[in-house]
Structures are given as structure tokens and as C-alpha cells.
Amino acid sequence: MRILVATDAWHPQVNGVVRTLTRLADAAKTFGVEFTFLTPQSFRTFAMPSYRDVRLAMPRPARIARLIADARPDSIHIATEGPIGLMVRRYCRQRKLPFTTSFHTRFPDYVRARVPVPESLIWRALRRFHGPSAAVMAATPALARELGERGFANVVLWPRGVDTKLFHPRAIDLCLPAPVFLSVGRVAVEKNLEAFLDLDLPGTKVIVGDGPARASLEEAYPDAIFLGQKHGDELADIYAAADVFVFPNRSDTFGLVLLEALASGLPVAAFPAKGPRDVIGEAPVGVLDDDLRGGCLAALDISRQACVAFAANHSWESSAQAFVDGIMAAGAMLPRAGGPEQRRFVA
Image (cartoon, rainbow, N blue to C red; front, side, top):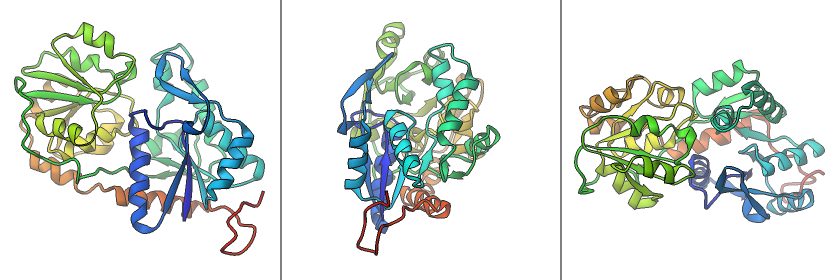
């Protein structure tokens, strides 16, 4: 089975969408599903206004059609609502081909943090984009319910996973004053990092990640340690060396970093927002409190082994299986022009 994923978010970007899609493809190989990606790397790009680290593609219809035909997919999934997602959506609609979509980003919250655009207009545009989808995949039950309440149809659950072979406890010393309070993610206004950096906490605050707000935050908070982007074992070492993972974001739909922290034996302190509530729930692995400082201090007493045991129940293999099951249940397989060996579209 071949699945083509159209995404405007791709390497060298470092974010939850890129990590999710990469891990999804790796895990799906274990049960014979092959993923190919239609990304900005195939097109000319330009820097996104107000966020120059992100480059948006300028796809042409003819090239989109040629790349899809060359991929010979059995199913098409549109992961983002950007230029590539819009063009692939148009391609499928014109040919009456089924496709699925996923809802990764709360754009109304992100846009509102930057420009005064009415939230209702953004939700209307998102409903229009996802409306023809055979299945709209959401990461958590709370997000799925919210999308249903906002008029999205065919919403299905697609949970996320964590790589426990990479993220696990290990003996690492960052040689910083303890306790170490860590936050990992894009350094941008919508991540609400000031809510963490403003806290009066003992020890050291560490930020891992990069983004348009990094320079200003480094200047405003000289006592915090900004390590920039980290990957692989280097990132896993930092997780394992910290004492509490702090997640001040109120708008993320999931937060893969929560599972990465827990798998590393790192308890979580967060606001009781939808993402952390759905990931952690009532499990004794974090403190969700509007008093973020109190949550950070209380999290110091949480068992690290309990965090590891909790994360062990969230595998990328089960996430990939749920993704494929969602496609099959929605009937989003593409029609064929001939027998099993004929893999071209009915166009």
C-alpha cells in the first residue's frame, strides 16, 4: 500500500508536524505500508511573512499532477492547509478522487497572536478546506470533539506516539544549577514561553529550540539558557538531564514533546489546556495547574519511573496503524484504471 502525503511543513523545519510525519512513515514500514511525501523541496519557495525560517512553496498545477502520477499512490493524505495542501486538494476535487486530511495546527490561535483577524473567519476557511475530506484526523479526543462542535464532518482519532528507543532515562549531567526546568519547541509568540520564563523558580531554566522570538527572549531573560535546536541523542540527553518539563503552550493540539519528556522520565508541568489534558489526563505523571510555578515545584516530587511506564503505552506503530485504519474505514482508496498491476489514476 502506497500513501502520498502532501505537506507544506518539511525539513529543514523542526516542528511537531515534520516529526510526526517522519515517525509515521518509519513505523508504517513495519507492516508493509510505504509513504511518499509531496513537499516544498519540489518547488520554488519564499519566506513566510513574519516567520522567515518557514518557507512556503509556489506549486504549479501541472507539476503537482506529474508528481502525484509519478508517486502512483493508493491513497492521498493532505497534512497541511498551505499552498501545497490547497493545490493537491484542488487536484483531487477536479478528478473526484477521495482524500483524507489531518488537523495539526490551531491556526485561529496562531493568527490571532500575530494579526487582528476575527477567529470566526479562520474557522470558516478551515471548515471549507476540510469539508470534502473523507476523514479529518485529529490527535486527541478533545480536539476531535471540538472540531465536531465547530461543524467539521467525518472527524476520526489519530493518536500520536513516541520513540522509546531514543527517548529514555540515562545518566547525564548538564553541569547547571539544579533543579533544571526544561522547555522544548519552536521559539515563537504562540508558544507562550514568557509564562515560563517569568516564573520565580530555583535552579535553571533551559530552552531548546529556535524561532523568530529567540533573539528577543534571550535579551529579555539573560538568566535562562537557550541551547538552540537539538536533535537525536543530543536532544534525548537534554531531556534525561532535566528535572521537570515545562509546557506553557495553551494552543497546541497535542504536543509531541510531552511524550518525549515522559519517555525520558521527565514529569510535566503545564497549564490545564486541551493538549496536555488529553495527553496526560489523570495519570500521575504531571501537574496541570493555572498556577504554573506551583505546578513546576510540585512536579519535582513525581516518580520518574511512572513517567517512563506511561509513555511506554504510546508507540508509533500503533499510531501508524490507526492512521491506515482511518483511511480504510473512510473508503479513501483511489480507483484504478485496470487490474492489480495497473497503478495509474482514473483521471
